[in-house]
Picture (cartoon, rainbow, N blue to C red):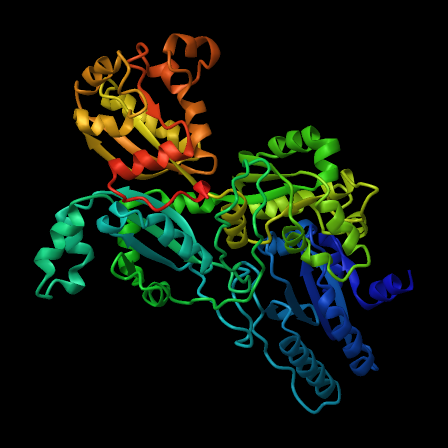
Length: 588
């Protein structure tokens, strides 16, 4: 308890507006650690602050405080910020701000300001006319001391060319972009018009082969991605090769866990794409005028949508909580506005548990924690919500029960505390970049074949595609084709010797079918569930919201078709798309 008293004496606690206003009456310099309720003040800086107070405060001109942004109106711009923020108040005027726990910079700022106050008090200098730091925008840096950042979120455009789409490189390119620490904010699949190609690529229009380039860019689907820089302080996880011998079911599958490792963060998406030898498949635009032009054409609602900022994160219920309180937690998650996109039970390996629990590594209960984490199934979830990352962090609270009771007693950490261990029984991604890597790891994508039959009208086809996307599938390949008998055999090879197969061929010959590669975790079983029973009449009884129940007419004209197994999916996809799609991760 003595340690806690020293901390309270070191930093005044400010948790409402009136206390903030009172703090501004301090004479001299006050250093304010602005924090979020879910994580608490920055403990890493307290040793420095205690040292400086002992060395510099003999004349009582140096004060320290912690201020909770959640409950102070003046600090509203700093709410939901992961990074520590330090404000410097001189006689009630905020004169400097430093983002991040940059100890040398904070130390220098404090020493300089204290020395100035002493000289002013001794009559050796006139008080400087400080430019007061406005708190209206939390991304503005102070006094030129800390690194300045552009207030406008910088975006790049990546165009994955038709050739790369056809040869199945889209998923690989997107995965590499994410693993390099970039964030894909939006994407669209379009067949570019000649006018758009000439406009977007006007910078290379004088090259000799440009006229040959234009038709290559208009002869198929391109992927247009809006990409932003990720959190540069968050190192990506290194990639590992899946174990080719693993044949376990998804609910039991244990992977070889990737280990956090510091990798180079890239300031330029163009530089990264070139270093990865992807330039021939993917073009990058980083000129802001051109970027804005592309966004306005393909993503007209992007600027308004980004203010809403739907975020996808990964969460995990540790074994004891999953066993005892699963339904209670899931109900709270849904009541808090999260949509559960995917969920699975998984028994963690020791290496996986150590990676997910690395923040407890120096605690004396670490070995017990790892034993607990590997003792039974955990529940992994993919959650979606407006401002999901920060809302989840605030909802579950700090990492340890002791800290949660002190800082956020209403958090799920306290509500669902278990006697087994003094830690938060819920885990959440530390950043959006980490979330995407964790989702890719714990929910590896799987490919399946989807087919929309000829009798489905164009309007119904669009409705089915919307249902597919709402179910979390990515359409990674798509083409419209009038299926000949040879082509139909590639899809229906399991039944081509059946007596009714000639009726199937007759139905398929009525017009073009839409053939797709659908990608998501557990894609095969999820697509079959979304399709519903083969007989639409049976579907109306057993699965009334399924596609076949809604759009099917009879067993033959039942709207859609899909693969039954991983082997069948890959064999069919390879035949229809002529080896265009990379090997299914779930096949291993």
